[in-house]
Image (spheres, rainbow, N blue to C red):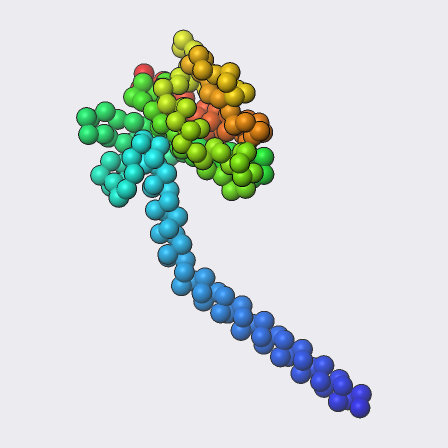
Length: 203
């Protein structure tokens, strides 16, 4: 009886081990099959975010955008040439919010001082609060704001709602999303600082 029980346990263990191997192999196969599509979807989402930062949408990336790198650190830079010939310089942003990563793109005018457009995204901010950084109402408030006071880079402040209307270096934050707003403020400053030598070179 003990031998039969022992053999049964061995068979159960072998069966479970085989099933684990088979399932792992299937998951790996599915992952490899889907990976090109996932990469393509991520690239398409990235391109649409870049376009939205310059107030464009649709299948227009190849028409308006070229990507390059600048400086010894090979910083990513996206250059948009609009129909009137003006150029906008788009900088990727990465930071941390209340619950997880923040990201976005900030488009600058050719003076490298004023903002032409912005787009933001997140992984886990609170719906109805910090997650509101993805709305047009928030991102549109950045247009025309300045990153400089006289010749000094000050980045951009995000203030309590209703406090930034007359401030050229600030926007209103998200009501109830103070920590996420602060995360966006820090993300912009920290993401832009490495580009300052490039800005100065082209002033």
